[in-house]
Every structure is written in structure tokens, then in C-alpha cells.
Image (cartoon, rainbow, N blue to C red):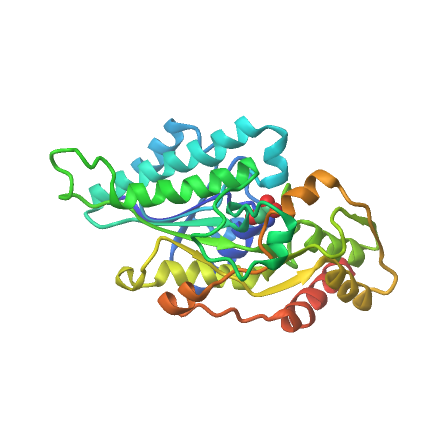
Length: 339
Ligand code: SER
């Protein structure tokens, strides 16, 4: 008998860390963790299997389904926005072809099992592209169907993969004779704002200045913030990001009116983050040294997200507002971590 499992790709990443711990604590799920590098030792006790491998490796994915019955996929593996710009074509392969491989696997699994496999996909604020800074500062909170012209490879990849998910869920092989008769994947995506975790630091994102400021200050390291002080985007702490993924996964399909949902918590300027960090760590050596290219990317991302669809369809509500995020979660946990 094959074992029923939850597959987590990109298991070693920031979201993977939080998600695997949470799933292990709150469910009986057998977790299969997949990542291109060996799984962090601290996560191994929580997983029934951990595999080092590439989501572009079809053989590996084929072997996965020989051994496991995959009920849910959290497809977290991705190359983030800054890193992707250094090799856009490679990023495209990993972000898009990798996602397509997993969607195909999910459709096949759904058909074998006779029930839809849930495919939970973290999309991003990077899927937005506001043409000018003036329009960004004037804009109301962005809805999912607005500003759909991202300027980064990562943003384009995320937006396109949202469409791929919708396609595989609703229109896959629509001309086939047996179309409509067999199960397809149940795709659900969340557009995250910048994420901040107390446990890990991000690698290769463009919203990284938020978490980097905080972690550098706690470690007593110098930090040059690469965006202007007035730069504003929404942020969310990792426990809320995990809550969002888990809640969307658990929501009954008939309540979901769309495939892609914004979630958000609080919006802050880099200057406001700087002030909070300085108050908590008065010795912090943080300066602003603007990187014009990365600045240009953040300038296309909305200041605020409209998450009313998520609130309505699956009762989304963050647990942490700005005050709680910094004073009850981030600052105490990060302080303890680097003590
Ligand atoms: N945090 C991501 C990045 O900066 C956005 O989703 O790339």
C-alpha cells in the first residue's frame, strides 16, 4: 500500500520551515519534503521522508508517485525576484517548468485517486506591476485583477503560474474525448506581501530589506537598506503566512469564488521599519544606500493589498497586526535567537 502524504517542495525555504513545523504539530500528515539541498536537520524529525532533488527531474517526480499517494501539494520551491534577474531563463525554468511538472503530477494523481489533489501555491505581490511611482502612491489597495504587468521574471512567472493552475483545474485537455469525466487538480493560490520570519532570513528577494534590517540589528551587524526611506509595501509575519496557507487549503471548494487570493497584514515604509528596529536595538548601525535597480522593482509593487475576497470566502484574518508582529513575535524571538 502506498502511503498517503503531503508533499512540500522547497522545504528548506523560509515558508517551508514554518509550514513543516506547523503541519507536524497540528496534523497527523505524513510529510514528504523535497528540496535541492539536504533538508535542514531541525526539520527532519517532522518529515516521514526527505528527498534531495530537482523539481525539473521528471524521473524523480515519477518515482515519488510510485511510492506515495499524494493528497496535497504545497509547491513552495521558487527563485525569488532579485535572484531571478541574474539568470532569468534559469529562473523561468525552475519557476514555470517546475510548477508545470508538479501540476501534471497533481492531475495524474487526482485521476488515479478519483478525487482532486489540493495544490497550494504561494504567489506574490511581485505579480503586480504598477507603471509609475506616482500611480503607486495614488492607488487604492490593489485587487487581484488589477495592475497585471509585472516587471520582474519572478513576477511574470508567478502570474503565469496562477493562470496555469487555473488552466489545469478547469480546462486541462479540454478537447479530449474523456474531458469532463475525470478529476483534475484543485488549485489554490495566495498572493503574499513581503514576509518576515524570526527564525530564518530570506534569500534573493527584493522585499528582503525588511527582515534583513531586523536580523542585522539583532546580530549587531552593519546594514545598508537598499531602498529609499519612503518606500512602502505590505508585510506579514511568517505565522500569519502559514495560517493563510493552511486556511486556504482547508476551505471547502464550493466557498471559493476565485483561484488566487491576496492576503495582507500591515503596510510600512522602510523608514517606519527602521524606526521600530532602532527603538528595539538602539545600537543598530543601519544606513540607507539605495540600489536604483532593486528600488525600481519595489516601486512597481502596491503599497496596499485588498484581501476582502479572502476575508469573505475563507474567513481570512491575520492574527498579527503591526504592533503584535514586532513586539510580541519578531523582536522577542529574534533577540533570543542571537543572544
Ligand atoms: N519576497 C518576494 C521577493 O522579494 C516577493 O514575493 O521576491
